[in-house]
Amino acid sequence: EGPGDLEGVPLRPPERVTLGEGERIGWPGDGGEDDGEAHAAPAVMVSDAGQAVAAALAGMGRARVPALLLAGMAEAGSIDIAGRTEPCRRGYWLVAPRPQWRQKKVQALVAALTR
Image (cartoon, rainbow, N blue to C red):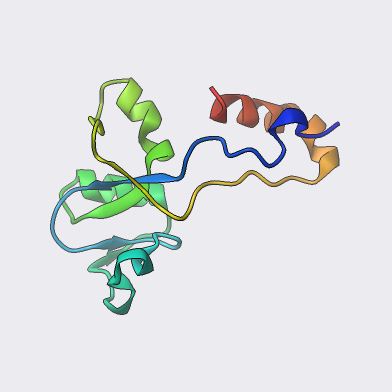
């Protein structure tokens, strides 16, 4: 058993959203090099994209995060990202050894990401 028809298929197009204003909030994988920001150290550095969202919403600066990360908040009406997405080179990938595709937690994650 494996990913079946989803093998190698992008779950959604790779898009990102910029939240907040001011100095850049950096996180591992934020892709600052996409627009030449890699040479400048971020004003705030956090450990992941979720913390970058929290910091930007708290007014600590500007974070660019995967649009997929904000999809749930947008659907709940907590945040408006309409018209603010932009294409990017990076997206999320789900990689698991074939035996792990039988695990319910892996199947649940795939189901949630493909809704």
